[in-house]
Length: 166
Image (cartoon, rainbow, N blue to C red):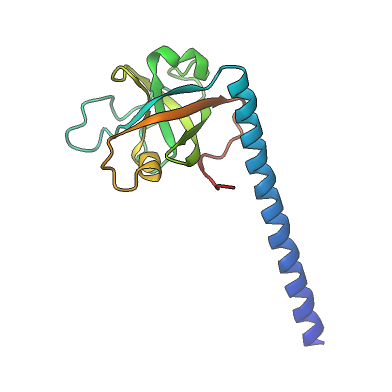
């Protein structure tokens, strides 16, 4: 009896793991194909990415509140977009919902919440918060990441964070 129960539990676990992997792969394909569609329509922006964290000494940009009214969270997957790109990324303003974007650089991809805007240094299109920048530059020594591709994502049901490589 216990052998049958163990076999049934093992089989259910294997089925669950396989279905989870299949769902994750289909989500990655959906994000990739959506980004390709968006890029074909010219909504992808290419430029430099830098980091901001108002809680770190020496950072003069921004404050502890974001454009949407949320408090800056260095552990979230979030970013501030160049003020001139505000409308392309959902018109981020006080009291509005954050928008989402696919950020690609250094052979990595992540979905980030765009909850802030700023007059960034010329050539820079996005300021990543500390968590996001550590993903693209684990040592935080680069300071600026060149040739980053940022694609707006429609809807608000995205889960921010890294996207597994295929």
